[in-house]
Length: 242
Image (cartoon, rainbow, N blue to C red; front, side, top):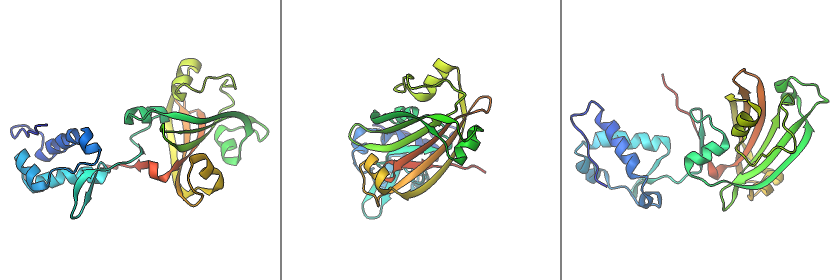
């Protein structure tokens, strides 16, 4: 792949370099562990200073796209699922964006009463039962997330609903419910026996817990969701601007 910087462009050189490096590391050879050319070689190839090149590489290292090891070099960071405040997507959409083929290891439906947090979220009586969807999902090789979703009783979902479809696509097409807002909480914990069995890990292995409060376009609560992720397969990113 020939990398060329346009020195006459109004786009800053470090941004052009960042774009070219992103394109370069999409190649299979780099995804499979090949080191990037060293900074002297790459800056010469691009016709820019090492400081300008380093600015571009540092951005990618900060994002987690690249990892730099002293005395070794720079290469593509192998990582799992990436979520973040800019990535308000359904799980299926996140996986499609990452090119990951999803497998359902378990899928269960039941009707359950919620805890106080769920009752307050949906504004329902303690005796009210919600439809609950539990799924263990992951790559073809292994599971990496266990989801529990409680749905608002005001939605006519039932045990006959085809939950093999992407959830928010199903809600929009079959129930005319368009989800808009997700308020999230992220925490960390040890797996424990129950989650460890679901995710094929050890009870003392770390997990990330991702709680979602999902609302529709009218700001009505739709879904209360908790996802228990293997910590070695999920990265959560936050980008803030001032």
